[in-house]
Structures are given as C-alpha cells and as structure tokens.
Image (cartoon, rainbow, N blue to C red; front, side, top):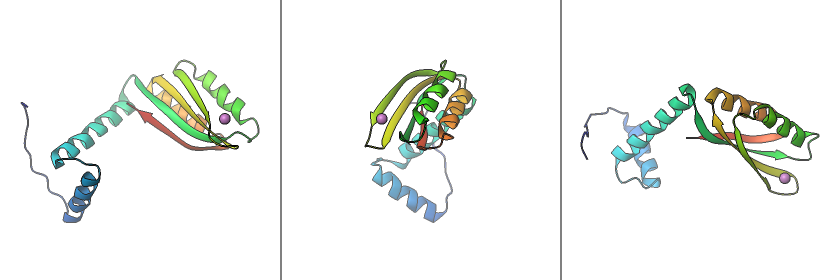
Length: 131
Ligand code: NI
C-alpha cells in the first residue's frame, strides 16, 4: 500500500472509548480502517447533496387501508417518472405494505420524491439509501 499518511488525532477519552466499543462490535480490525470508512461515508453523503447523479432506494412502509393512499403513491411516482427505475411492493401483513422505489438521477429530485412520499398520511419509516 503506497501513499499511506499517518496523522495524529486528539479526542476526548470518553469518545475514543465509545468509538473503540463500536468498532469492536462492527468487527473492524483497526481504528484506521474504521475512520477511513467514516470519512468515505461523508464523501458519499457530500456527493449525494452536491452531485449531479446518484443511485439509491427509497424504502417506506404504509397502511394500505388509509383512504386513497395507494393511488397517491402511484401518482407521485408518475410525477417523478424521470428518476424512478423500478418499484417493489411487499405485503407485510394484513395492514402494512413495504415499498422500495429504486431511483437514479438528480439528488435534489430524489430528495423531493422522498419528501413527497414521506408527507403522505399513513406512510411510516420512509428512508433513503443511496450510493
Ligand atoms: Ni401490499
């Protein structure tokens, strides 16, 4: 491995202890690897906010008995047709449905689609995973 740079980091003792417990749980072999992953995660998030194109998935759960909810969800997806790649629907229980919308495109449009879904009454736990 070339181009490895060592640098010192000053942290509060308690933060470092918590960090060490966390990385042990996540089975990291070294602090360096864990810190590298944290930094990379921030880069991905930065690109998500400032980049031209991202790919990801909007995942949410809703109660399909709520009046008109399925139609509202479909209407919104048609409004954002340019970024919606595919949708998967899972009937979780008698009441609840899980839906995954795979998206690709402008990050602010993806965010806007997720916000629109989240604002529908009856939609719960709407999260966005992106890469
Ligand atoms: Ni369903």
